[in-house]
Image (cartoon, rainbow, N blue to C red):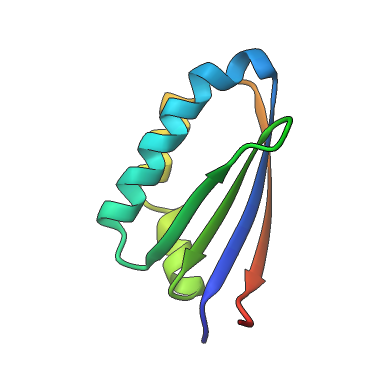
Length: 94
């Protein structure tokens, strides 16, 4: 089983990004510090919305992240922000 990447898009109103972004960045920092299988967690901002690129040691590490304490905390903290999340999981080729 090889490395596993996730490309995610948050559709979020522009007036909500200021409240949401600090929560997302704190979540990213926690994941990189406390989840050994989380290898990379980039936050990108195209003209609209927010995007993430995450890299994990393998799919098992992603599932541990997805079901972990930081994701639960982030969901709780960001509960008041209207958003839609789209995830695309990918096997890393090169």
